Amino acid sequence: MPNSAATDSFLVDASIYIFQSHFSPNVQCVDLDGNDVSATLGFIQFLLQLLRVANPHYIAMAFDESLFTGFRHAISDDYKSNRELPDRALKNQIECCKKIARSLGCRVYASKKYEADDIIGILATQIRKLNDCASRGVGIVTRDKDLAQLLFSDQDFLWDFSRNRRRFRSDIAAEFGVRAEQIPDYLGLVGDAVDAIPGVFGIGRVKASLLLAHYSSIEDIYNCLSNIGELPVAGAKQLQEKLMESRDSAFLSKRLATIVTETRDASESFGRITLENIRLGSIQINDFLGVIEGLRFPNSLIDSLERSVLRLDEMFKVVSV
Image 1 (cartoon, rainbow, N blue to C red):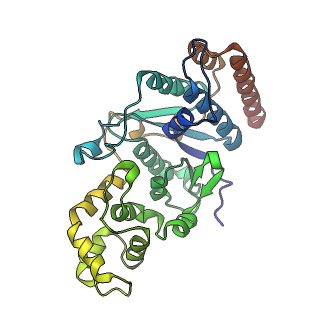
Image 2: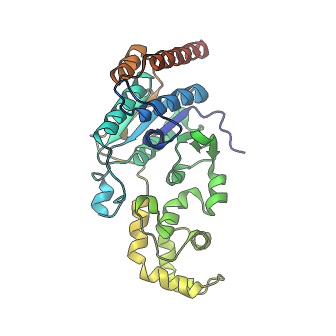
Image 3: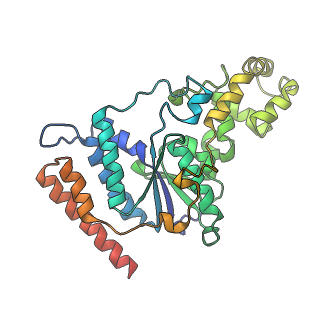
């Protein structure tokens, strides 16, 4: 059984929880002028609860800012073509969520080139290389299965916080029938409609997992393509034909689904960090209140959130003694 108790490093896929709150019927909030601010309120509630439950030593929040500007769009015009940019009101809320995270002591990262997944991948790689963190796992707070490819050790886990569901390498293998590091190959075969990644037409979860049980990667599959027709699976010949017809799509899809784990881009602040860069800082209550007052939250809600933040701050002070 993986040991998650020693985990004190958390990387958060922040944008997912903002959009979840924005579209959820369970989180509804309007400001004094009647404008919807549900995304910000939901994010605040999520982050306060996460900090209380996880009590992290190190934490970083990754925000998505690369829609239609990221490097994957230069590779494929269709990538995430089914998405829409947030409107001005939601964009303003996202900026406020960044300020909220900073006011609660969290380091915030975003990029016009790299997606939040990539930022998490780059940070996770560096955390593992630090000597005093070598034996600890990394907790990745997300609902996105794609990030399973970053579970390199048995201590690493994905944490779907809303459902209180933690998934380790063994859980990924049981759910998808492939090893965590094969997720890019798996998505290269089955595709991903959410991100408009095509995959190989006619290959679904079952056939993909069977192929990746016999071959380690898409590259391995195509190196042995002449043998696919002889596999002891139903429809092996047709499977071979589908792979032949969709070779370019398979390799493109894997490339789109592969999360970046290293960068030499000196302009990206997350490209080279120390643990001190992502150590949880002290709560800045005045900064926190400034954000929600600027959003014109109702006074009763401001008072309630202020009490919640002060309780969290007190808890951190007791734990640190």
